[in-house]
Image 1: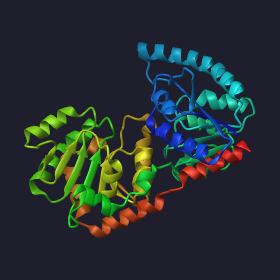
Image 2: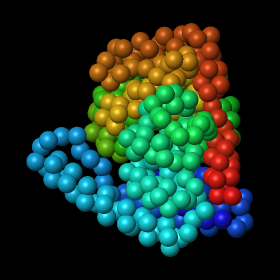
Image 3: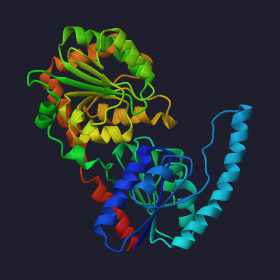
Image 4: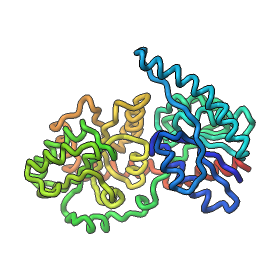
Length: 372
């Protein structure tokens, strides 16, 4: 069984595809798997390191601007799109896949469209509650569309019924134990733990709003708090040091550059604060965590807002838009939740109810059935 995956751009696209591919490799003895991506994004590093064959095409997205640089970029994109169709067709005809799978990113477009024209079974997975342009287009052509959340369905015109599969979550998160995690971190039974982050790189607006919250929390010690400033947030580590934080710690507050034991911290947390990327939300749901979500307004189609609202509309999370974000509002939201245990537990229960913990298996079953 030969399976061709097309995905790239961000870890949010690549890691779920790798999770599914790895599962198929482990469970289907005759499987041969290849990935197609670009040479200048994360897939060029992540896919080969996971032990999969990897081919590249040259593709980019369009810029929504009429500036001279944007126009020049868009002309190059058109030329790349034309060339990438030929590159995709060659990869497909050489590999002879039984099924071609798209997991998002610009690279999915030409690869999946070439596969459709060649009559090869195809499917795509859409991570977000508001689909991107590439998947909106592909949904009309491919044999099967898989969704992380039902909300995305209303934005698509698929030729066949969609299937809600969820998004694969790392096994260490699914298997984490809250009591053991809290013991490992030294969190007392009678104290709440808040976990906050803005992604691996960090988010300056979140760091700025969180700064006053953390200074106040360190002084009052009402609850424990672990915050990551991200790899681009070194300036904030210096600011905390100037306020008496030693090695990032003061009182019940710990500030880190990066959280490298996320499974432990997330398991131990009573409240999670962060962006609303599809992978993060799937982890929050799988672990049944209450959350305050601050969607990034800088992403395509404002999809993080729609991701967050999928939880908010089910009383499974709370939202603070970045344009409204202030230290006062954030502190108020935290205090309100942590002072109402019944409200906190209700949100945790509703978040857990949204989780699909066998997502990897569901997606693999669909891929394998199409290949057969």
